[in-house]
Amino acid sequence: MQQPDEKKEDSGHPPFPGIRDVKAGSPIRWFAKGWNDLVSCPIPSLFYGFCFAAMGLLITFVFEHAYEYTSGLTSGFLLLGPFLSMGLYEISRRREKGETCSLMPTMMVWRRNAGNIGIFAVVLGVLFLVWARASLVIFALFYTNEMPNLTGFLQQLISLENIEFLMVYFAVGMIFATLTFAVSVVSIPLMLDRDQDAISAMLASVGALARNPAAMIMWALAIVSATLIGFMTFHLGLAVLMPVVGHATWHAYRDLIEPLNEQ
Image 1 (cartoon, helix red, strand yellow):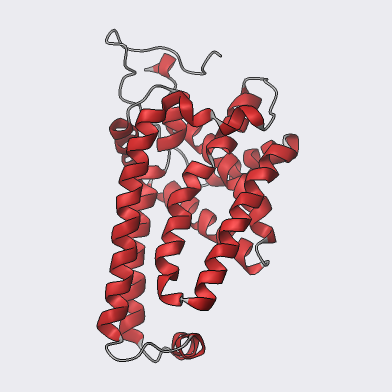
Image 2 (tube, rainbow, N blue to C red; image 1 turned 135 degrees about the vertical axis):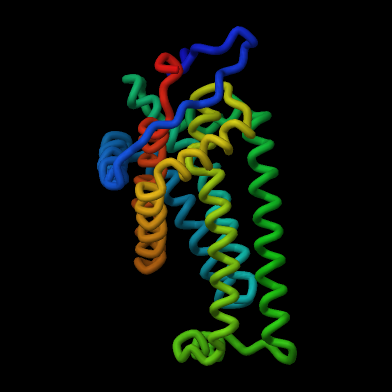
C-alpha cells in the first residue's frame, strides 16, 4: 500500500521533519475535520471510542477503591491514548487518500513502523512509572500516618484543607503531563506516515510545541476539556469525543509538519 509521504534521503531514511507555523485558532479547524472523519467513518471510529470509555471506567473504579493510584492511572490514560488512537489516525489517513475506512486494516497499523513505535512506547512507559512513583511519594510525604478514606480525601479537596499537598500534587502532575504532551504531539502520526525514527519524531513534536506555543496551549486545553466532558457524562462522552480528538490529531500533524515533497 502506497504511503502518503514516500520521498526519502539517499541513505534510505526520511529527513528530519520540517515544522510549520500555525495560527492559535487552528485546533478549532482540526476538531471540525476530526468530527467529519467520525461522521464519515462511524463504526470503526466508535469502536476505538468505546475502548477509551472502558479505560475511563477502569480509572473510575480505581479512584473509588484506591484513589492514591488515580494520578498514575490517569497518566496511563494519557500515555496509552496516542497508541490507542493509532487506528483513528489510520482511518483519517485512509479517508484522506480516498480509501475505504474499515476497522480491520486499522488494527495492525502499528506494524508499519513497529520498532520505532516500540521505542516510543518505552519512553512513555518510563514516564508513566516515574509519574506513578512520584504520586505515591507525595502521598507518603503528606500523609505520614493513616491515609484518609475517599470521603475524607474529597472533603479536603473541596475545602482546600491541605493546600500544600494539592499544590505539590498538581504541580508535579502538570510537569509530567507537559512532558508527555510535548513528546507526543505528532510523534505517532509521523512514525506511521513515514519511516521516521522515534527520536526524530519526538524532537519534531517538541519543536512543534516550541514554535507554536499559542496553538499548542489551545490544543492541550481542548484535549483536556474533551476528556473532562467525557468523564462527566458517565464515560459515554469518551466514546464520541476521544475519536474526534484522535482524528483531529492527524489533521494537527498534517498542519504542523511539512510534507516530504516540500522539504
